[in-house]
Every structure is written in C-alpha cells, then in structure tokens.
Amino acid sequence: MFMDYQQETAWDLRLNLLGTPIRVHPMFWIVTAILGWPYYTITNDFTVLLTWIMAVFFSILVHELGHVFMGKYFGTQGYIILHGFGGVAIGSNNLSNRWKRIAVTLAGPGIQLLLYVFILFLSEARLIPHEKDGPWLKVNLFIGFLLFINLYWPILNLLPVFPLDGGQALRDFLSLFLRSGEKITYTLSIIVSVLMIVYFAKTENFFMIFLFIMMAMQNIELFKRA
Image (cartoon, rainbow, N blue to C red; front, top):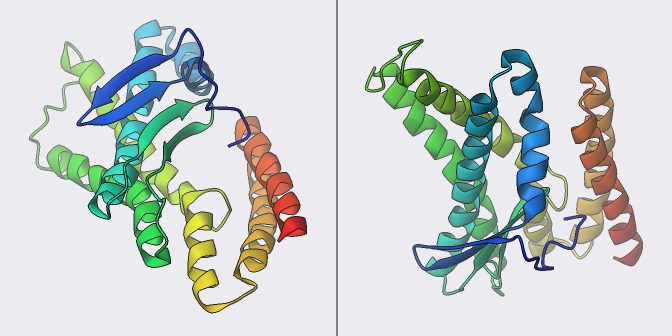
C-alpha cells in the first residue's frame, strides 16, 4: 500500500516460518522505530524502543500469518512481505469465491483480537508475574505493547476503508449483491478517511493523518475507474 513493497533490496530480512516465506523490507524497521520513538524520548532507554519494535514485528507477523493460514485452508499458497506501512500476505486471497476471500481478509485482524484476549487472560489470571523491576520489567513492557497493538490496530484495520481489511471485506460483501458494490465501497472509504483525518488532526498524529490522506487519494482514483 502506497509503496513498491515488492521491490527487493540487499538489506531485506528473509525468513521461513511454518512453511511460509517471509521478507522484511528495511522500511518496516525504520517506520516502526519512528512510531516508537516517543517511548525512547520519554524513558531515554533504547531497550524500550527495541521492545516496541519486537512487539510490532510479532503482532504484524501474526496478523499476516492469519491471512496465510486461512488461505491455505481454502487451498491458496501465500507469502508475507512486511514493509513501511505494515504487511501484506500476497496470494492468500487468490480465490474466486467471495465468501472465502472475506474469511481470509478477516482472519488477520481476527487472530490479533484472539491474541489480545489470550494475553489478557494470562495477565488477569496472574500467570504472568507483574513485577515492576528486574528481569520481568521488559517482559511486562512487551506484554503491554502487545495488548495495545493487538486491540487498537485490528479495530483500526476493520474500518470500512479500502485497502484496509475492513474495506476489502466490505467490497467483496457488497459486490455479492450489488453491481455498484465497488463504487459504494470507495465512496464510503473516502468519507471515513476524511473523518479519520479530522480526528487524528485533533490528536496531532501526523503519521495517521498522512496514512488516511493517502488512502483517500487512492480511493478517489479507484472510484473514477470503477
């Protein structure tokens, strides 16, 4: 989304997890560090920034694996690229059946929300020590980041804005019943993007403002072509 994430570089990190090829573009680490930089400025502790980066990496990887494994259930073979604006599970929703595509699309945020519930259960059941110092301090910081990322990010991702997962699922759903399903999706995406720009302008979250401006522009172009 918004960048040529398929272009390979000499600095890409390559992994293979549970039979799924994974490539991490250098911009993933850079953007993630920028997003987490306020945590470093507050604490003046570089390990806090590293903890944030690892929490984001783990969470987005889980999200994309949700897409891939749901796709595998339906017979597709996907692979993952993590890039500056998150991640993408390429090939996972190469399915002609729209209901199956919707299931693959929703599996990403769905598995994140399940992860949130699981971690919250472990925390509330005191199965994870709640020490505020010593070796458990960074563990609890990592868990805190995971709880934040895997609740708020999937909720944001479910907004009816294409190409977020919510927008992709909405486009497939509406297209099942309406010839104008795509145009309706792009129109709603533009409206919601503008509302989110106004909201994040109040909080001075410039990254999210930029993100939704780009999505609004993308949906305007898609609306013209639909």
